[in-house]
Length: 112
Image 1 (cartoon, rainbow, N blue to C red):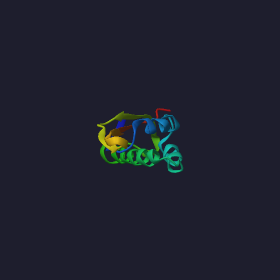
Image 2 (image 1 turned 90 degrees about the vertical axis):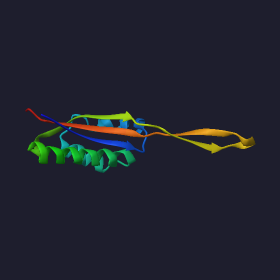
Image 3 (image 1 turned 135 degrees about the horizontal axis):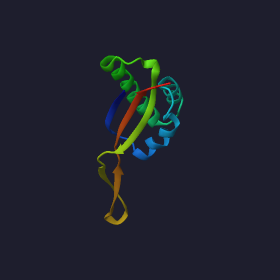
Image 4 (image 1 turned 180 degrees about the vertical axis):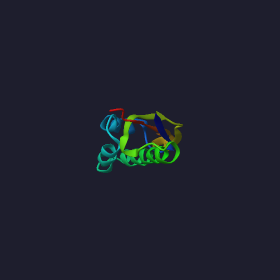
């Protein structure tokens, strides 16, 4: 049985979130949360919060044993981009793209 949690419109580039995905994919939830806690990246805190939400969904809604959960997948999709501009020399303007992400954490029961 799978459980998921989604965080939308997070103000971080999906490229930065995808760097962390391989570090937690396939691990037991407890190990994944411990490794995310000590990572210095901003994305680690966001993914950790989403993962805790998925664990709470499993416990409350599905009645799954939390100790048996494994991180099946973490997906970082691109959300809408906020477009801003910065004034430059000679009356010009340059675009600034402030990217957003939709982060999905999928947990599954370990069948061992």
